[in-house]
Length: 261
View 1 (cartoon, rainbow, N blue to C red):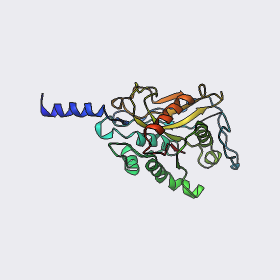
View 2 (cartoon, rainbow, N blue to C red):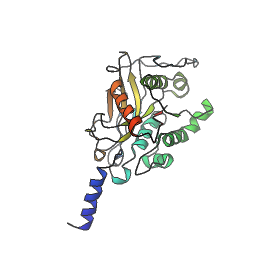
View 3 (tube, rainbow, N blue to C red):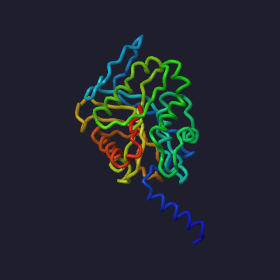
View 4 (cartoon, rainbow, N blue to C red):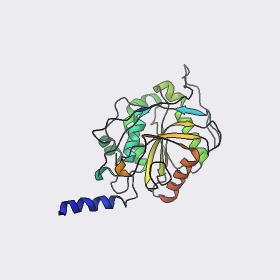
């Protein structure tokens, strides 16, 4: 066996040991389908944005909602092993922009470390840098902020408030997707592989008022080389989402910013 083949084999074996989200956009594969196959009530903007009441813990203004996004895939190679944050950012930006920056452009803005991935604050800075030209003239401030959220009630409140954000719907024609930090071990499609992971939630159904029955829908961008074997979009129970988010808070305290909304 040549030295080159040995080096490749060792690199692949080492990649399997890294607790990271590995993989993302195969150039021969087009952008994935638009994700709006939902029978949720369409949110119609009022002529003038109505003041939105603050959602307190335990409150959900409306029980269902969705934002149209597009699917993306990260390059399935060693160099892009920690690009799940950039991929999730592309999904988020697709709700706002008809022309989404390529994954390399997004990564340059969010500064992922190849050995540890991307911090929530850096992802937030990148998102706002792309959106500020359209958002600042309307809102007078960046739209997204990173936060350390430690209760499920607050996570649900943020998802509902953002996806159904009336001001955004009136001003920009759509609601606001939410990015979350998770661990992959208990998430579908990961075959128990445990890695820090960013996802973009773009739809929810909280109509059952029961975390075991209520659901969120999110995009997955990693390639099969990353360890993900599943569809572009996943729907899981709120209870399952919270298990993955709690694992992140417990296992990766180096980055406390786990919700970008």
